[in-house]
Length: 122
Image (cartoon, rainbow, N blue to C red; front, side, top):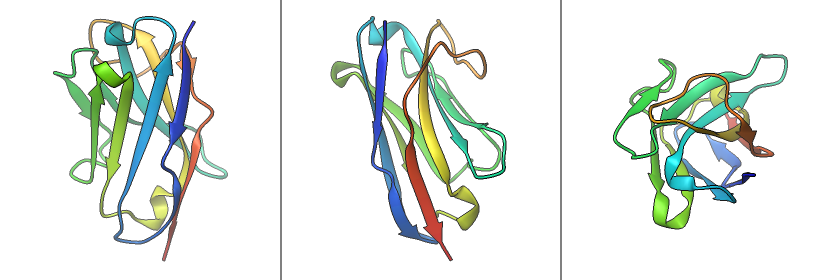
């Protein structure tokens, strides 16, 4: 039903910023909770941030609070992850996910993008 495509990853020095985008097609984007996850080499996939379909509620992992901001533009079928003050430990493949829900979702997403690589150098 839903296809998700991430973009915006790349190589950045510690302390720098990147903005990831995830654009959805199919389904009704305005009724999907959206989330960002990441997976570093040798590590399990971890939750990063989520936003409700209205954009009114967000939730962040403790490791990124104060540095990352999730937002969405339903008119563009797009969710964003603004990443500031990047650290080497932020290096990972970042994926977006979608699920029909009326609130934020931390688990059990139904649709996933292919991921985009973020590499933060020391």
